[in-house]
Length: 159
Length: 406
Image 1 (tube, helix red, strand yellow):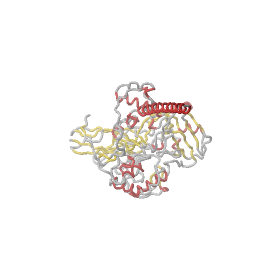
Image 2 (cartoon, rainbow over the protein chains, first blue to last red):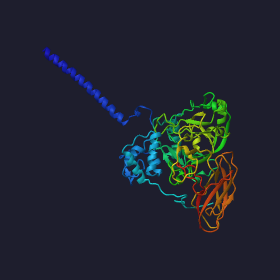
Image 3 (cartoon, rainbow over the protein chains, first blue to last red):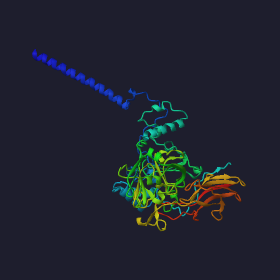
Image 4 (cartoon, helix red, strand yellow):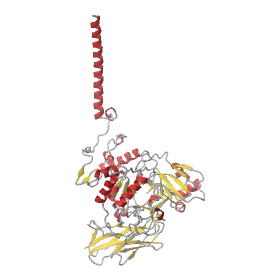
């Protein structure tokens, strides 16, 4: 009998322990679910204003290409694109690259200058890929001593 | 004032302007919450710029005007170009902001709070022309490296502040003083705290001019954040990079200042003229000082069509670095003949000058109106690009607009 009682009380304490654990687990699970849906705990704070502007859906494809353009940066989609994106847009914007028109020699000099003074890392095998991408997609254009006026938007001048 | 607060406040007022009504509970927008407009930073809202301004680069921010946006006598903030070398400082606290004068040629290192600067020294206001050394870079062939400015990296606002000379004299400098160099709160693009995005300066003669200011107001108001709030060195007539924004320290040097963008090919041109594309050694490059003579036709916008017999009224501004513009001309026949037009005196030294003309065209057709200014030394703007240089500085070629008479 003694043995039996002892066994019973052991079962009871295990049962209690399991119940407590289950309850704790349940509470934690609820808390986690709540935190995921409201990470700032705003429910417990002052009411926040109703926002009147729409929420932009998060980008499905981080490196989406549209009409031959890498949407996030504006770079042309071409061989070497991702090497350029990953190495050339950490410090400055892609716009600084796209504005410029240089030959391979001057791009290499620019890369060297960035390595010597601007904390750019060693590009290794990517250097040739990057320079090739740049001179292929953004080659220098001949402008001469003075260009003609282009892209004039004509309008009637009323005085 | 913390930048975040500043931004959320400006953002709020911009949002308010956009929605056309007060945003209900606007003051309750939580601190960590950034309205959607700011998440995808719209520079026009962020910096209160006109929608017609052109963004060349968003990191760092570089934004320029178009010629017709610069028509005002005094450039308002909305039409003022932004040229940043690094990132805008993030935590600006005016209650603890100080300016330190130090360097090899200063008698004792001295630090001033903003309140001390304003109370201890007399304030002065000048209208000052600030033009980026690289304005017009986009026209060079072979192309030059950097932001491809067209014509709009120039402004002429009024600046209020104390004279740099008064502050330097109060701190005391020795006869070894050669140059001043500024240090500022902006952050290097790599976020390396050891690096300064830009630290340029000027020889003592420029530093001691009446018009060289440590400014705390632009057009009568606090300097906008993108233009150097709360304190900016302003040295009109020189490359605008001398006018250091977010100013914290000025070093009085016993040598030519050797800070970031003082050396190599930055803000330097070949000491002797070179052929386009020629390589130039660092030691053969000379620091740009006064900017060259230049002018812009700010009215009408290029592309105007008028009726045969109708006169065309044009106007614009001309400036010449340290010098005054003495003569203004225009041509409607690609420089075959030039007509003089009146040029007003500057409001003060180093301010741009206004010109205007009324033009009659001989017959129908396509015309270009070209403008040409001549400085007090008799030097005029070239019609073609001036001497090529590796970084594409100092393009002061004549500005022109297209006109059709039908």
